[in-house]
Image 1 (cartoon, helix red, strand yellow):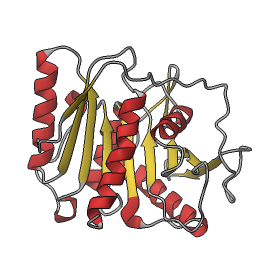
Image 2: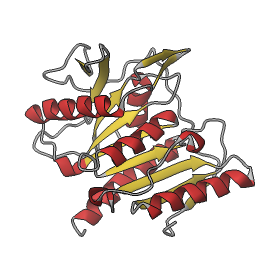
Image 3: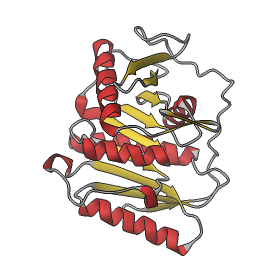
Image 4: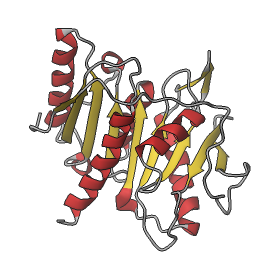
Length: 255
């Protein structure tokens, strides 16, 4: 690790979301299938229709090039959980894109996607958004929770030119296969690894080893470890994603 590991107290606000309550954001001008959120879908060549919700900042400034956070939910969740995660990270500092998994499971959706097909959809969606908004290609982040975190990291490694960093929250480390080496474009890409500690000494050892493997691949890793709470995905963890994004962009311009 790079010395940036940190631990937070267990009194974090819990991550909660009532799916029956609307999320109030401005209408996206071209993609307005819902009254207060944008919706975008596209066939992937495998007869799957990808679904994504586009969330604009609460006080959107059209001339400002907001960073973009693409969010991949965990198993049994859907894009509404992604919207809630983006909202709790920040309701002002970013444009958010919450994707829906491609496989139906109990309680929601999961990911069984061909990363290349999903990457193509994301690129098309970003291109569509850039028609109406100032989106800089060097300000695009991808993140996710549990299985979505695994996929977010895979997409960063597969398409390093598309993303400036990945936020990997509570990854499923045992089911994640990392490459033996990286391409030149991948080196130096930023990765935030954030996870609650389970209380088992082996879990901390696994996290440290996971960070070491990422650094061995040439990634710039920041690690945030949290004390256990009733909810694995907390307000504090999501706020740290926002802070990490701001720090990443600030360091890129030498601020």
